[in-house]
Amino acid sequence: MQNVLIIDRVSEKFLKELVKRGFNVEYRAGLERRDLLEIINKYNILIFRGRLKIDREVISAGEKLRVLARYGVGLDNVDVEYAIKRGVAVVNAPNASCVSVAELTIGFMIIVLRNLYEYISLVKLGKWPKGSFIGRELYGKTIGIVGFGRIGSRVARYAKAFGMNILVHDVRNVSRDVEELGGRQVDFEELLKQSDVVTIHVPLTPLTYHMIDYYELSLMKDGAVIINTSRGEVVNARALIKHIDRLGGVALDVLEQEPPRDNLYHQLISHPKVIVTPHIGAETIESMDRIADELLHNILDAVKWL
Ligand code: NAD
Image (cartoon, rainbow, N blue to C red; front, side, top):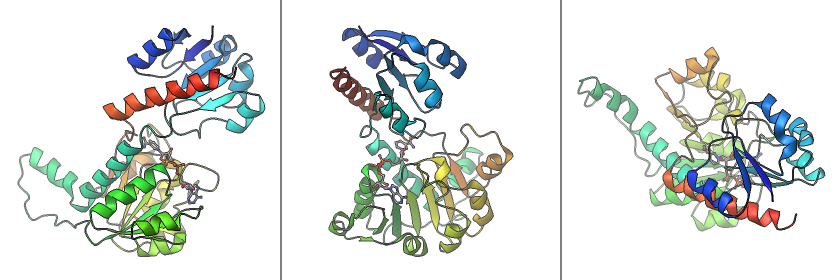
């Protein structure tokens, strides 16, 4: 029997399915790193989200560990290379949340371009500020999509439906797929210079860390909007604050520090042109169900080879 340790919140259904399939499950949501290091040597499968770093120390402490299962998409908190070297399989649920994150991106664009946040807050305060914040349409605007993978390509399809012009930057050659949508694959600088909305959909890697920094922001048009639903580290928050007055708005679902503690993030969050949500891109009923199903399928696939 495989011993499974779950260290973050997962769905009830997922827990039940694991038990039904004969796994011996220990559910310790919120377990601290030091406690994890103490007990991990008893388990064959570790299920986790993005909260703790699953690094060399954790992986080597898990002497019987055979599968690392990320309940979600991002593997940036996992030393995948080291795990594979030690013969530990790494699985995740990469497809489950694409629709939810892409829809959130479109929602962000409309909220920012129509100043909905200001209107809604003021009406709640009993005001009626009609005419105070004249908005902009998506139609005819240029969206610059950085990263044309599962989420970025879906954002492109939705943006096309709104009549937006599509520019894409990706390290892979995706020009054929982009052209099918009537868009163009361009280099990063051209995308930054031409776009009315820049939206980020790359994974966090050494190459994408602070990919949007002072220089990149300086290339963007006055009034352009920036959206990040990927990973906080991709955008330098200090640089954003420096350029905020020139920008049309910023919408972030992710921050380099989550939850934010440093004053830098409070300065950013409280700025009237910035909206921040607490990393909720995948938090829909549908996406959570799909994560559970996809991850279970991938865990069962991985244990077949043990
Ligand atoms: P994906 O792997 O399908 O696509 C990423 C794309 O980025 C690929 O096409 C890749 O070639 C491209 N890319 C990689 N490095 C690049 C670089 N240096 N320059 C340009 N392009 C580069 O990823 P995805 O599933 O679409 O996820 C995108 C991002 O969204 C990830 O960071 C993921 O962690 C994040 N995400 C966030 C949430 C959330 O809750 N906000 C939920 C799911 C995913």
